[in-house]
Image 1 (spheres, one colour):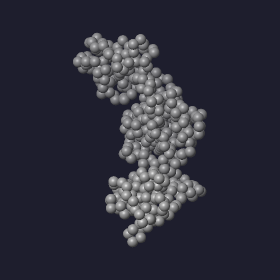
Image 2: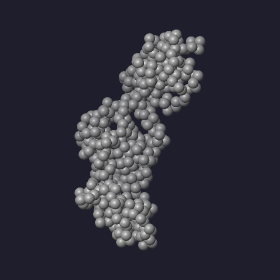
Image 3: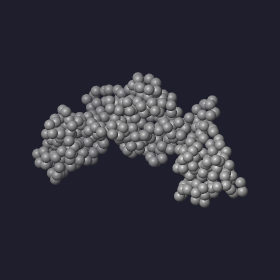
Image 4: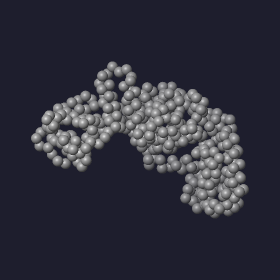
Length: 423
């Protein structure tokens, strides 16, 4: 394994020259776009001759300066120059590359499967921060998809996903009945390879459920691949902000005598449906919205899509309408004045209490005192993550009854008692 904290030698004039020359030669020979490769290499060597790197004090700073110089000609964010040297006793064959180093402790964060949830209305939600190799995270990925197996729609949250590996096609395989050609990679050498979804994945496939993908300016590389290819297949609606655009798969090249590692794109990606990719342009969302509100927008859109489908089960229609009302209310909710909240305080039925806790109206329901009542209307509130509601009935300006309702159609009428409580 390489040492990222190693003490690098001082960059002599000879070492700086050989370092820069090797980067220029590698870019010229291997970078995927030959014309851009020559432009970047020529500019880098011109800067070297002009003395641009003569005052650089360390190998890490030299690597950073060289990266910036290359990007000033052509900003491929996958092209990265790194200061590197093997750990004591290692060699360049046994050492890991930059990407492999980043994976060493991924188990500590559950391979970046950060949150899995069933949102109101039976909408599955997965917050995924990177696409780890399936060889490491396959069981975790399969378990996540099985957790979501009974969802009526799926939301993949990639707003903080910076990329990764073959987990892209593994997860996409749950969304297609048959193997599907997702992307073609064309190497600088002319070699061509295709990536398809898998004919088999563990657990239940979700080939008919609507799919929504959240993206942002932080979504990059494999995160963009996942969104772009599903979008072009017509299999997903992409919601959020346009991404930065990184569509070139990379290789790593190490030069131990120069303390140098180069991450360099050697392939271009090509969508089999459109023949294009997302390099530089980024992924263009179908619904362009502010990143912070993308989840609520996608959640509501998923429910609307489900409600547009023919459905003979009226209870399911009511279930989805209930959920959509809740999601729309959250997006447009305003805070009620304290005096409007206070008028609902009281005791209802045998054991239900409604009370003020600071600026929050709360309900003691089933023995719990921490359910906040969120307004749906002037006298209707929701609680328990939107699964239950409380409607207050007034006569002559005073509450006389609380009607409790749940998402499954249950209803309880609870008369007000004469002993309101305080928090």
